[in-house]
Length: 304
Image 1 (cartoon, rainbow, N blue to C red):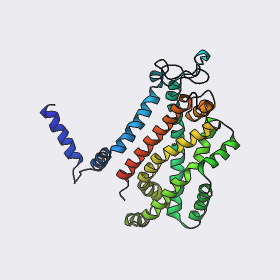
Image 2 (cartoon, rainbow, N blue to C red):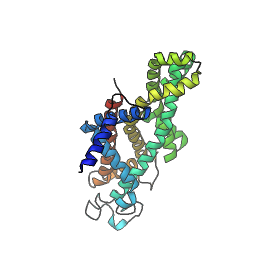
Image 3 (spheres, one colour):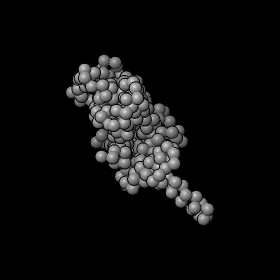
Image 4 (cartoon, one colour):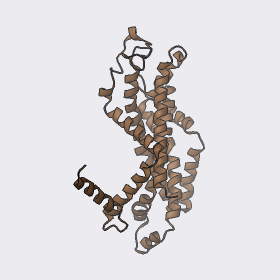
């Protein structure tokens, strides 16, 4: 490495680590850099990041990673054990399990992303509104939240899917309906602390409306906790989606969904163990990755 590149790297580091930033941009980049250094020093968090990044890369490059078409049936090759031709073996219809697990990452990510982009904003706005406005608004919103929290998530999701009908879209809707209450609770707790801060009183004295205060000043302060909660909750979303798929209420055949693949292989679990084992391992590894990543983000972003 040349002396020029070393000096440039040292200059960027000094600029990011400056204790007296010259601009808001420098302050924000410096904060992100310090958080990255703290995150990088956590081995378990880095393992979780590697797993999640690998999941994203596999989903993006599924046609290149998968050795065969996950939907093509080959009955003469049914229930073949793992081999070089079929790394994870084949299922009861002769389909390559490795290819189906690889393509199943796309289904899992679609479910997780759709649920997160739906649940996060809803829970954040409800929690911030309840915590900041208080009074009857807080009472009504929190009692509705308590009703949803009174039921186990999977049981409530089963009820919604039973009413809407099986399918991937209905499974996403059902999971979203059951996943927002914890976000609202976290946002409400954060808002009740923030609303008594001195800078909120100063903004109120300047004549800012309640909507502007909540949207411009309260919501951004709740975002770190929301991000951490979202990352930790992704494992639960994956397990709930797999549970619905296992019961035949999630993604429908022939879509390669991990829970449905486990359900299809339960009849051969003792003789052809690979049919259900590899999709189950995929669920365990991905859930572990999101949990480790969420723990690392919590340690970095939550100052308490």
